[in-house]
Image 1 (cartoon, rainbow, N blue to C red):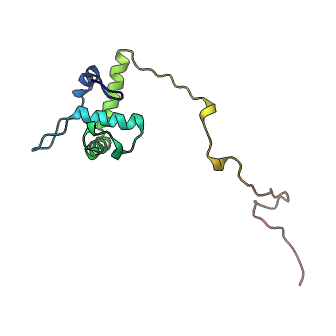
Image 2 (cartoon, rainbow, N blue to C red):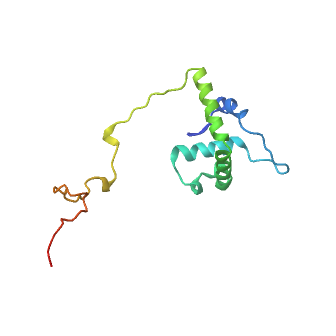
Image 3 (tube, rainbow, N blue to C red):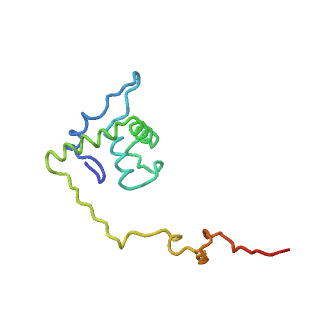
Length: 135
């Protein structure tokens, strides 16, 4: 059963060969599909790593694999190859739309206090008027 935010069998078959082989001798690596699905769930929902559902295995395993693959370029390479595959079968949607009604400025950007402009022409905003007094 394919759940929301998870790869279908067809999608998994397309990317399984693109993933690096396990390099460590000894204990076998945790199932790549389960870990990749955990990464996708995190990316699509924005949950904290510790809040990943148990079906993806230990959150620390998913996090460590994500961190390692991000650092060594595996995820970038994977995205690049999947993009090429999607373009080849014309399934890549490049349309992007930004509606300004949902773009918000930070609350402090609404109206900052400004110093009054120095109209004497005697320098920058911090210049003080010169007083020539004879003592």
